[in-house]
Length: 243
Image 1 (cartoon, rainbow, N blue to C red):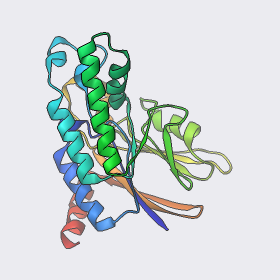
Image 2 (cartoon, helix red, strand yellow; image 1 turned 45 degrees about the vertical axis):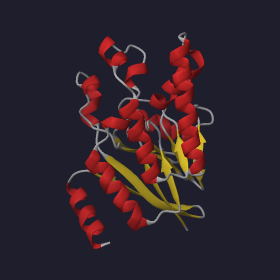
Image 3 (cartoon, one colour; image 1 turned 90 degrees about the vertical axis):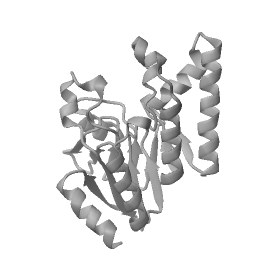
Image 4 (cartoon, rainbow, N blue to C red; image 1 turned 120 degrees about the vertical axis):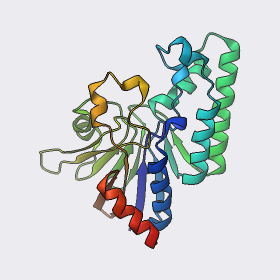
């Protein structure tokens, strides 16, 4: 039997501190064989397309520091890059200002160096190869958004008879594929704050919830459990205090 834990969407310095605290303490109790982080380790709001003047002037120092600090504590075996993380990689390759490009390249080197020290496998944000499997359980960051995102991810990425776990949407959702030897999909929520300024006008943020997933794989058999901030949080905290 192989136990795993899957968490996603920290977003650096806009993380939800309580959720991260519960996750890290539960990792010590659950003792997973594999720790997978599902992407958007950093927010990188100042280098996003359409960033306003105030965002562009914002320093990335606190964002990067928070992301790297989380890596040191969570110690993932696998890091799936997310669309926010990819902003730095894109800036390091395509930015038209040399100084900005150089700074981004140094940032990429620092992140990869950190992962190398942790012996953490880094998987690119790529719809064709951006996934990691433990038997019939597949992990991705996520490539679709909206209320049908988990359904789309299940249809495209679920291994027959298995399940695909994803982040990206910041929502906790579940979808089962209605066919013989079908599969399932689960959106596991996020480690980030759910009320960030950039999404106050978006109805999708109403579905945002804090949480993470854990479970096990034994041959073709699998089980996944959803940890969700709310009433369940008090139970998990009791388990942690007893552990």
